[in-house]
Image (tube, rainbow, N blue to C red; front, side):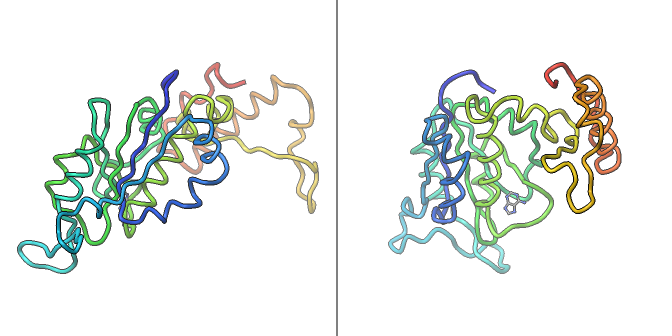
Length: 235
Ligand code: ADE
């Protein structure tokens, strides 16, 4: 995470309207209003030199579907890119996205996110990109939802967006799942809050939370390492 300066994010998409709502509510809305993150949308169709503003064409070698052409995306990226930019292509064949990657990207100054759509994109678009990211092993209709996932997970890590205590104990931040939390009432429909949380004994509560986080991680996500879970940043 960087200590100062605004993170600028430029999103290349054929469907900017898809982002309405998601970036205009709650924490993302406040982060934008406070000037902690700047998010811009660019419909790369506007960069098309085709008389009909076409952005895709049939694949060489045959086969079904349409493929996004180089020209509109190359020209759009070139109009935005500076020495400080990191250009990211959202694609199911990219490297799998993690909280670790979110932390790394939250330290950058300028991100350019390219959302593919339709069947795919001309392979040469890869030459424009510094990274290729997938949000998981499943195929979506385009890169819009994946880029929303990146923007949301990165923005919440920026200084001043949410309190640091809120995310240092989150699932994955420390390579582990989160401990269980409860709020009032102490008994609801016969289900009780664990006694220890009502005890007021902070040392015991801390120990219990550590054990519960480890147990949950072991049961649900044994693939996570979990060893960094309880460093001194968590009280
Ligand atoms: N585009 C389509 N599916 C995707 C995925 N899983 N991750 C990133 N971009 C995608």
